[in-house]
Image (cartoon, rainbow, N blue to C red; front, side, top):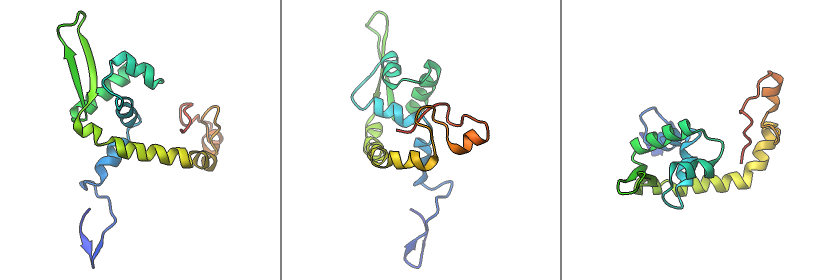
Length: 145
């Protein structure tokens, strides 16, 4: 991961450290969700949007373009179809992220209730104690899990 001191790895995640790549990638709200939605195979834009739910067409398009730029998703165009048929699919690099995303999903299932309780989030509206006390909705109505 980085430099060693007296036989131990230094536990820092520097800005240029490769270990931060996964954190940075999954730090975006929609990247992991879109990758997971493509795990079953290629999908058209509308089908992805329906399957994911809660994502605007604009944000989905931006996310797909970003993931395409990262070489995690490929855009496939069937020019022979009328109208043109466009699908999105995971690349081999994108598929390689499924296991870490699956592991995070397992963690969420196992510890999600405890995490939500610790935050004081209201399952109905997604508001936590601190956000409500400050007069903010906090998480835009989204719950964890």
